Image (cartoon, rainbow, N blue to C red):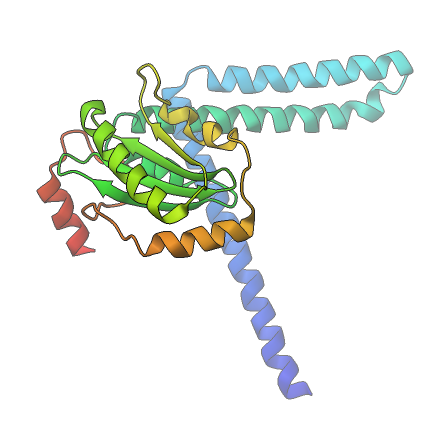
Length: 244
């Protein structure tokens, strides 16, 4: 028994050490993100401080009415801190999407970062000009998301929708073009747009669809993950992928 307990204790210690290291790395990453955002966003700190003070003042004022202002003060601080962190997260996200917008691969990157039960297959169709169609399987059904020059992705999207329809039968297929023109969905609102779509199929249906669609393969050249710099050449992109 003692022989088995020693490795157990050592494993627990190692796991605890790894958790502490991961937590420390995450805090450092958040602090670096805060410093970078503060340099670019002069309104960040005043907004965070303002919402913190406002929450404290409101909760303290309510407590004052009932004579428990000092008891509820920590609650006001906690609410204000949460609100300040929420503002920080939203402004960082907006900044990241703003920098990525218009770059090839940005939509695929945004889809890869979605939370929840979404099955994302980036680059199921594409052109040598870095236009691409990405496929998403979710509770709404099949969502085809295109990015690139509108006059090229329109035909590309229609072809992929026809190809997909042959396999998925009556499953709803949605098509989206990412951009800022009329009828398009801005990059920063892409995830929210998908979340608002109606739920038409079950999780079991998603598994079945994923198995069927995997047989279709991809009609696009391999692309590196994440937004690409403006003016990137397809030949350079393929060379980068091969190195990986």
